[in-house]
Length: 506
Ligand SMILES: Cc1cc2nc3c(=O)[nH]c(=O)nc-3n(C[C@H](O)[C@H](O)[C@H](O)COP(=O)(O)OP(=O)(O)OC[C@H]3O[C@@H](n4cnc5c(N)ncnc54)[C@H](O)[C@@H]3O)c2cc1C
Image (cartoon, rainbow, N blue to C red):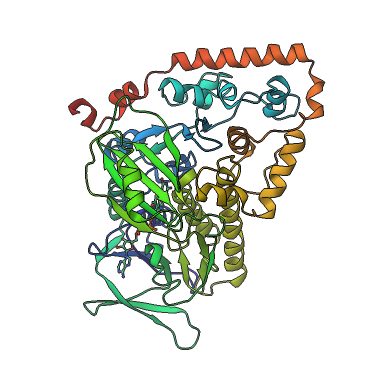
């Protein structure tokens, strides 16, 4: 055994980030590799939101060996095939950003090159016909992929909506079952070594001191160790993403259960709608520079589909990220690392990715600086690319009906995004750079959905004649329509496989 092996890990915080980290580390670092302790404070509580995911969570679940039906049942979850955007490009618009691919790539070219050649109007509605997930959203259907050869039914890409509180509870049970020690208490102080500035211990209000070799800061927006003690610094992106507040309120669920998240643009931000088995999650993400809290409450409460099930909860945030996600012997994961508004449901994914990278570059007590630097470099890249994708939704609009939309429509945008839009505008080309999260299908869905027009289609698309292109695209549409018809309704699938009992009682 290496003398410098990490023997004690302290996870600070028991929200989704803390318990996702605890569940993964306890699964991977098994056979008494090290002690894992998690400290959390019920009095402080968790952020209580974070209920929509993207398909990458499937990898996370498989790593943990999660039984998916049990998981959906216990978190009162539903399935998600994409996000519907309403009123974004202009009022009255509606488009889907579905998971999974559109059509089929042909002759080494992306499907969207042929789509553009065929559909000169590039309408978002027409595009949906080429995605099984989009058609299933429209028809309210869901099933998991089955072994069906080349059929799109073998490649259904999906994610989940779930109750954030129940999710943390579910992961806590799994983590404690694998030996993670949970300590209830409020951290009052963090002690650094006087020689090297590494974190030595945290002290609880009751005086208990907890030492560790590696500290994982999952303490939420406050960044108790990474900012409070280590002063990592913060890159503030409010000038590109001016929303800095959110109000969340659950309401009675409405039927049928939609298999997608809906995001509706409002005067000074946007409203989410997340269907769960026992309730609907709703929230308004807005900019305090353009709307008062009272106006925001009126907007949210005036746009609920069912009876509210609680009082509105107010949240404040600053979009951006820590200048160092990992400093010395502390790694920040979750809201303590940074925040990007949940428009594309990316925060839980960033937690998952942070844990995966930590495991790839897992330290010993020497804390190799080259690994730490790489972790910080890759994570910064990840945050920046998601940031650009989110900015696209705001900036590619013709909305000029409120000062908020005037601002986001006319603001300067990051160079990377500008290049991406310009490339698309000329020949409809999209390239995925390095390991950026969103692939060309996602960028195409949103650029097309937000009405950005390409001047010409990719000239190489002429390798297939017009008649042959039309024929192949018709075949793809028909195959997708037939496949979608084979899928049961979302609600039926849940009732038969993973019902929490709320739907039967509701
Ligand atoms: C409005 C909004 C909507 C969101 N929607 C989505 C979404 O749809 N999809 C998505 O992927 N993500 C979403 N997110 C992000 C998601 O909620 C978070 O990434 C996720 O919940 C993780 O939060 P966390 O665990 O980092 O922080 P928290 O939930 O805030 O947990 C912090 C933990 O630290 C503990 N703690 C703090 N200080 C102390 C102390 N002094 N002593 C002891 N314990 C302490 C707290 O008790 C708590 O257990 C959303 C976020 C917001 C703000």
